[in-house]
Length: 116
Figure 1 (cartoon, rainbow, N blue to C red):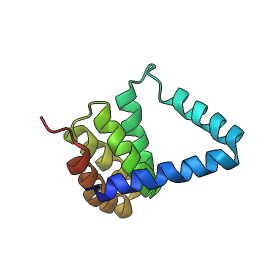
Figure 2: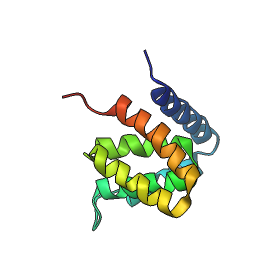
Figure 3: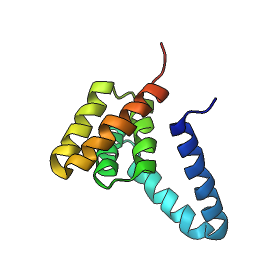
């Protein structure tokens, strides 16, 4: 059974696939730029995912919030690191950011966290 966050990621990827078919040059350029931004550099991939999560929350972008919460987990971020990034975003962007942090992000952590 798919979870709601897995369904949202699937929906996003389907939409991206359709967009890519219609505007392949734009999608390929955007994807290449995004991939380059998330490559390991002075900042680690984990740090970049935590930053992206904070921005996603502040922008009220549910798809990106889900995508980057999963990215944080995939890069080895702990629940504490993720929640601290959420708190920083909420300190700057306010209550709506906090409401997504205590709902969507925690749901993602529970659904995507590797079980040991």
